[in-house]
Length: 594
Ligand code: OXD
Ligand code: MN
Image (cartoon, rainbow, N blue to C red):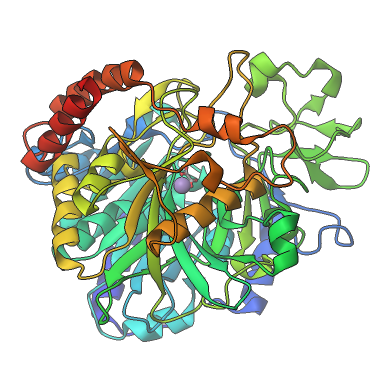
């Protein structure tokens, strides 16, 4: 497919190491893709679902020990340890290549090596970057064909250039003790071995579009962020764009595809989805910040997705979708997950492929008793989404009015607040915290600091990353305003107070009104908080202005407690945390103590 010497030499070298029987180039044609789907079914890697009810859809199960990203096995391999920083796991590149070379050796024997040329971003746009993934997994090929723009057009666009990210993946023995997800930002290289779970093996996504891209962004003066991108359309047709960073499985996909409450729909408000997970941000010629979504599909969390929480996501999964680790309804050969509806299938296999008894479901042991794994996923083409933005394929992206940070916090963080400047906003992002979810292996529900929702995804030192945010702020003549939200505050009984989902529109409209100086706010020690009356509660059941007042309250004691934790976390990041962040922290403490 190409004469590019850099590409061919590298593929030959990797093939000599992994020893596949053949090399199969992925051209992106429907003909080849359909043949590969059929082959995946023949080999038992995928199950074809009911063609009438779920046309073009498939089910895949990963190994039971391989169901989430493995942060403990994810490494940034820079020559100097300090460039990877204290928050990342680090390995010396030479040592890492040597260890992984032995794991890759002969790992593709007996089967083909697939070569997937892919572009993150629209081919031909200034934002786009090219990668090539070599893999032994058909599941990876078929997912990459949904999640990225892949195939011949990409290799043609690369031409003779050496400028591509080299990704090597092999499932090998799926041995979790020998599982490694390794990034070599100085070599534009990613090696992933012994996993088959999306976040570890779809190398265009977290590995390239966040970890390697964040490194490139720092070098080249742009940003790669764990952010959704949405457009709010006003009744007059004007559209304002917002990006929002929430940690994994905290509702980015739901917010990105939000359906406004009826009172707004009637007036003509709409929300358009540009992206649900990753944003690449560049300074435009007009001095504003512009965003693109480098992906081409959604790799969304299935459980909890339903007609109420996210009808747009659900619609996106009704055709040409790959489901991973969901429950298989044997009666009609469709899929099911907890929170889809109240009718669990009676004749079904669970995510492990075992006969499933829905009456044994125990909320306290989801992994053991649920039909679908808590981190089960759908891989759906973005084009399937009824609210996909007309700017989805734009070469220049969309101009960003507001950046929103958010976490899952039962207490402390109010429903929404606004930072007082770009520097203060970067500080607000740096002190984000959230309760952990099933998207990563490990305990669920523990509060951990997750700066800008990028803790698992920054490809270099976290202190330097904060520094890059501050630098960018100095260079954007007309920067977006920066906010923080928390949809997850609970009452004394542990129930969520704010209805969330579509009603988050009410908060988005306050945010956008602030961006245009159309609404006032109260200044508090943490920043600008809405006057409770300015969050519209019309049409909400059981939520009054008083509820909103409670949701907006700032408890000085718990904030001061949080500040101690932030100080410890900054110390853990180490000496590259910029002085400006410590100044912001000190000023916050002083305001809270006043
Ligand atoms: C994801 C994640 O899959 O953040 O998007 O884990
Ligand atoms: Mn994510």
